[in-house]
Length: 78
Image: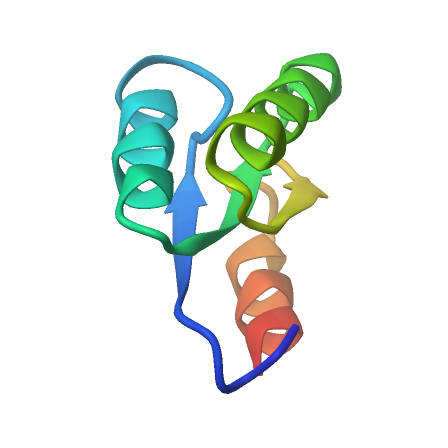
């Protein structure tokens, strides 16, 4: 992850509000760190956003209700 670029972390990114937030941020040129526990939907989101908006998408397949998962996301983003 390039620390000189603008990234947005979006949880629940593969569907619903999280997906729409990911699209809105991609339209504004943000690269996305997309977190979801739906791996197939994450792949589809990544493909769509990178093709449509020419941005980078990093996907993290993770259930944020699991113990220490939020810490793992935080550590990854550092």
